Length: 381
Image (cartoon, rainbow, N blue to C red):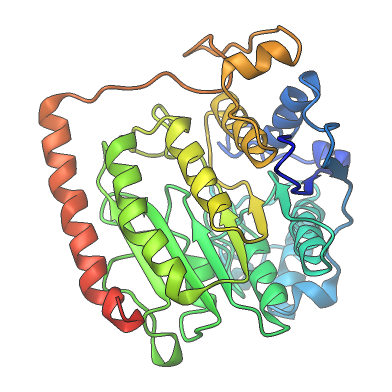
C-alpha cells in the first residue's frame, strides 16, 4: 500500500462456500474465489497494512425478501428438497443454467451475505473498498433465476446503500448485460446503472441497448454500452472513457458498486470479447480515481484461472499496487504463470488485425454516439 493511499480494504471470503458447487457440467465455478484468495495469500496481499479479510454470514430471509418474493425463495428450498413443481420451472429453476444442487439456497444466501456485509462496512465507514469475488449475481429477478443467478446480491446491496438517501452508481463490466439490476432501478434516479457488455443481439440475455435509458423519474439513469464481438482493450477503454467519467460528474455518486465479471477476457468460452485484464485494470484505476467508497464483486468469468488472476490484479490495484510482475517479485520472487502468459498477474497485450479493428471501431463509435444522444442531454452534458 502506498504511504499516500490510506484506503481501508476488506476482502470478503467464507471457507463455507468451498463446500458448495454447481454440477460438474455447468460452467460456473464457485472455486474461483478460493483461487483468487490463494494467489493473494501466496504474495502476502491480504495482510498488508490497510488490508484485511472478513468472514461474512449468510443473508437472512428478511433481507432477501427486500428484493425477492417469499414464494420464489420457498420454491428454491422446495426444489432442493426434491419438489420442483411447474411453478418452480416457470421461475427458471432446474434449467441447465440454474440447476438445483445440494446447498443451492445456502450457497446463494452466503454469497449474498458477503456482498451485503461489504455494503454495511462501507455504510458504517469501516471500509473504503470491500471486494467479494463470490458475488455479482446480476441476472436474478425478484421471482426468477437466470444466468447462473438465484439471488441478486448486487441489487440488494444497491437497495441497502441507497436506503439512507445516498446516490449509488452501479457499474457493471460483466460481458453479459446486467438486466436484473437495471430492471430493479429502471424508474429510480438514486441508483444509476451503467452496463458495458457484449451486444445483446449476439449474447445472453439479449438486452441492454442504448435506447434503454429508464422511465419516469429514472429516465436517463439507466445507461447501456453494448459492444461488438471482437472488441479489444483500446476500443473498450475508449468507450468507457467517453461514457462513464462524464456521467459521474453530474450524478455525483456517494458510493460505487462495481460488478467485476471477467468473462470479457479473450478466450472465455461463453462470450466473444477479446479483452486482456489490462482493460479491467484500467476500469478499476478509473473507478478508484472517482474518490468514492467502492463495493466490488465478482461475476462472470468461465476460464477460472484467468478470472482468478484478473481478480487478484484488481485487489492489488485496490491496495495501491500496479499488480505487474515487477511488484510480485518484490513480494516473494515467485512468478505466477498461466497457460497464456508467464509474467505475473497482467496479461500480455493482444494486437488485433487491422480489418477487425476497423469493424469494431466503427461499431463502438456508433454506440458512443447513441449513448450521448440518448442520455447526456438529460444530465446537462
